[in-house]
Length: 283
Image (cartoon, rainbow, N blue to C red; front, side, top):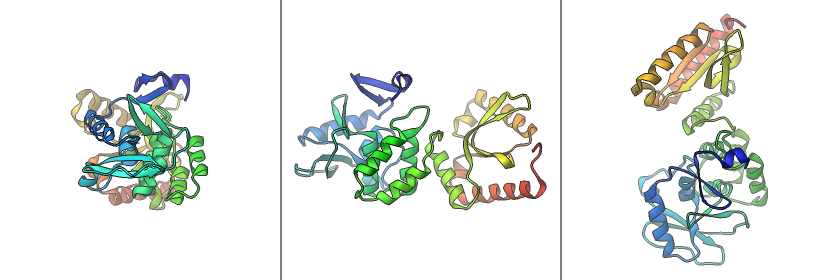
């Protein structure tokens, strides 16, 4: 982890040598601490560790989401009790860290363990993207590769390898990752993430979430603040107009569109086909 990253504002420093994302739900910390105190040697793992590191993946059902994942080393009895999902793990020396008095599996080890509790390739790619995110990395690609080599026989190893191959360092959100994977799965060209669009003078106009550069087609995922914040809305309109003036086709994807990915893929495919037939302006 670089010196710049260690000083990043999104990280807390509860103890020397430990960095941890801000914004962790206090309820999770309280519940995990309470349950962990009943099980000597227990630490946070799997989905609870993923929530701790804010990896943006969670169990499919509400009942499962309400449970706390607690694990112990392989020689100890598995944690049991109401609200607990217990595990026994064989850990490497660097695969467990302590933050604010809570022991939790390291970011890279947490990613490895997610494959054993039902996470598919898409979920594992979301988590990997978050781990190696350039702006606030929690692990490096090399660390994830080493984790896979160390645990060659781990459950879900094939899915983990595919996810690592798909992971990129420029995905700003889980929804961007899922949208990218949906596009690729549909057989469309692989979009470029965080593409900087420039005007004819080389000045940056916008950074597109996903872009088909040769076709000048881009997609932007917009949260609700793009609608409710008047300043953001005015900025978006100006930006949208400038991009159109440069010959870009812009698709703005909100929650409603994200819920219908097949329709998003269809309109993007039509735009790419049209640009292929007619040519791309300015290219």
